[in-house]
Length: 117
Image (cartoon, rainbow, N blue to C red; front, side):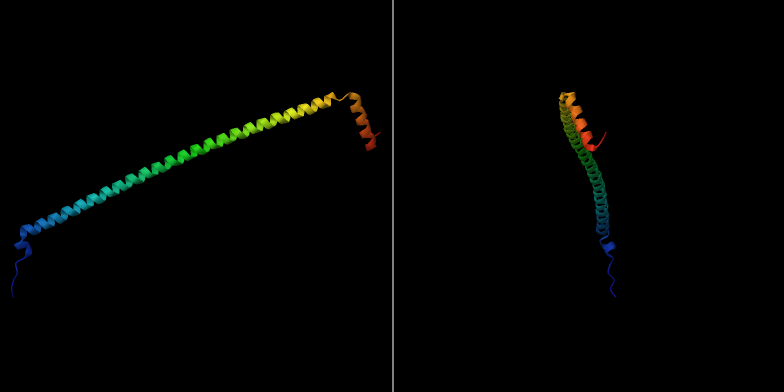
């Protein structure tokens, strides 16, 4: 049987260099993966902050819209109240303009129809 010299022995230095190269590549790959994980965490944190900022902005816009709507509703309510008060005042003024004798006659007429003594 013929004996072949071991590759490690024959190419000793070359094989060691190859192993060192492989280890170096593995270390570099691990470093790249670690950096990718760090970058992914950074991006995740940045996106979470962006989402929170966007939510705050939407909440502020919604509060502004609600405040504007409430202000408009309050103005409309005040206008309606002012108009109603004006109408009531005009009606009361009209009643005040009716001579007392006419009111007394109308009350007596109503009472007679209802059968009051």
